[in-house]
Length: 496
Length: 124
Image 1 (tube, rainbow over the protein chains, first blue to last red):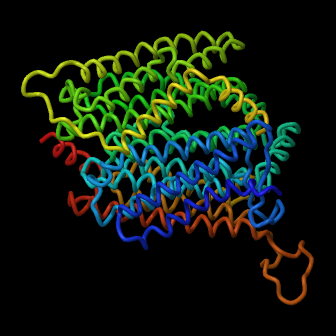
Image 2 (cartoon, rainbow over the protein chains, first blue to last red; image 1 turned 60 degrees about the horizontal axis):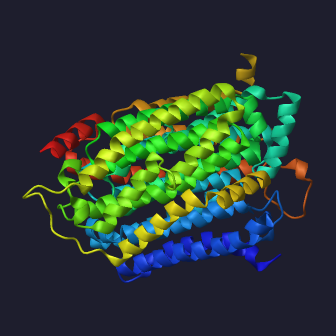
Image 3 (tube, one colour; image 1 turned 90 degrees about the horizontal axis):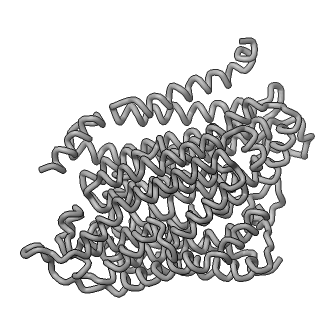
């Protein structure tokens, strides 16, 4: 076995170890550096792995502790997993850099170390959800990321965040309860927990017509559970308060990564366990498709009504997640490729928007009401540019990442006439709605402040500058050179 | 109906799961919500444990020489239950800690009241 095959395991393990070591460190600053190291190391390891297995188009499964299948636990890695893991680590690193100043302002000094433990655990859980080949391990990491995600919302100790955390926690617990009973039922009708064995049995059941009802229930429970946790349309109400009130780095990580972790798991389950053909036959994709379309509209309408810039961005996340669900709902390979691409686009754009919005409000006594931010872009030009780039990408202007995602979605629908019309109409409507709240926000930020409104000039924090520049580059890279990334996702999906 | 009686453990587990789920969703009292969560998770463990048990077989613990695998019950569900218990204990501890914080601040465990109080505070 080549040494490089250990890298996925190492990247998960480094995060967990750094979470364990963090309490021994002197203060929050050191914990911060260790977290940066863990996500940086994860990025380098996943990047090397991607460089190796991406062009060769290979996939492998890694036996934990070298115990063979029925006893041991496995990780499975292919180009799709590698590209997702690389993005996750990069976004985590940049979100920490971009939100570093706010973390040390918002979180009590004695609790800063604990905050970084939670960040490490979230990264470990996300990587594990991306790589794991065992359904029960997936459940355990779902719960780990739930607890850690609630904790990072609560880290900013205000009444808003506490209520938002409670709401988030309740919805998350409902979701993971459904996932758990789904997994248990699946175990009962198949007798396996590892993805490849499960897939064999599920195909068997589907071809013989045995247990069709329980199988449908299982898929429904798991999709609904993961849907609640990733804010699929009717279950999205917990998201805006939680993501809108948390500290900057938390909002970035939650919106950019945590909700995606469950979607990535859902896609992997669809391919590696249930197989997309069975999912299509059970008509689950049609439900996801409708929920996705509804989410795209409802999220944008919520954002238009919102005057608080971070909650507006959070509502926009609901809309963007709607795109992802719509892509999955198409039920075709090309639709899911578009959904995966949208995951990458949103993961690179939303954290930038959150950190720029916070940086802009820093000169205005952290007032995050949109009307209080008139002309704020002149006080911190880099943040202004970052916010504008992010907003244009979310609207879907050509050359920006969001445009490439929309083109992919539109071309993915061509094979299905009914869904095509619904998708194209909703895409058009949603683009208009996106523009309706992002353009006014950008205009307010860049209009000259009236007298007495202007805030003080803000010194650009070097860490923030690095993160914004990297995110802007990523947005343009995904918008202009998207073809290689799409090919990589396509190959990865074929190998799942 | 007959199926439900034969699989009475599973039937009970599913009913309990429903009770727990609805309590977690609909109760206004946060402590009762957590109790609902406890019921929901225990129902899953009951379901798993009943699946793993096979009447007339031994506990999967080796005493002396290795006997036939068919003499023992399936140990995997028990392992899963153990893992699940660890998870639900930590989630319960976290929720209770959060409820305690909310109670210290608002002197109530009724979620609707807390939301209202928090909104009033936000408006001021």
